[in-house]
Length: 378
Image (tube, rainbow, N blue to C red; front, side):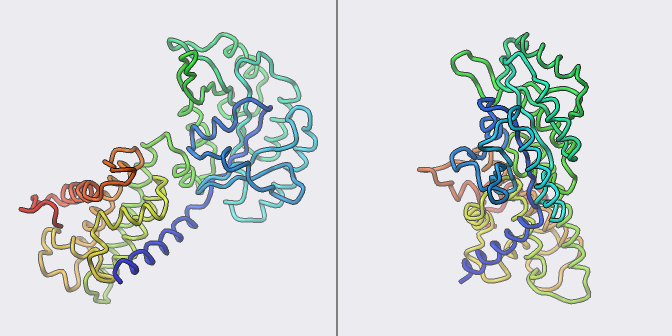
């Protein structure tokens, strides 16, 4: 069955891309009640708290790792920062020693140290904990949480606390705390704020090799997602050109299909679209289920200028590149619209016709071709 072939092929590429993207691991510290879970959920959109804190990193450890797609969150359980620093730091030291023998995706990349913005004090034990994190090689971002903001002004107590922390010249990202409010306070009307600033600081110190995973994991910066998608579209278009330039003849663009499926799988993950939904979207976009085997995408080839109905033979590098680039742009437009909730639904199910129309509109735009007499046919 063509549909089975497509699902199996797309699942395989999806798994490959997920493995190559890796995982961004964030360690988050702070006293009980500072709003760590709320902050993580606001930026990453993962309801970590609903599914529990995760599994202990080692037997009898007080450090727990929660995994959600391209995100790992290391949190503490049973020990309190400021009271149990010696034990926590000992466990962190052991974890870091072990993880550095493993793949980068298993290591801690950045730490957020959270302080409630209205607590009015920052204890020496907290400063010492931050210094020790730095000594362990973990970049530390200090976050003031639950900071009221009214008419563009932070609460004076939060400003004073931030100044107190900055004055200690701690080894922290930016040399200062980042003031945040994770979500709208419906009682006071204080808005959410500071999340993009915090995310930018995190990107600045995250290892380059896991920034792609961080782009995919976060949910608030769609500009970064679009840039990451564009990067992989360009890479895939180049790979398609190289495949077409190969002296080995091929028919129906069979050699392009794995490249295009891999590109689509990667973009789906950048926009946090899970496999099941991504596969359905891909079928709706390209009418993949109605076409046979490896020729899934070749029905679109006839729209490429200069190809026409002679797509059965070998095609040139320029056509292969243009064709793959157009598919990537069209698919990215679909994924972005879905991620932002801008695609019509009926009873919670996406409208397949609307998905197909979004894809084809962008596909034709990138190829600069005229609209056919029947706009619903590729």
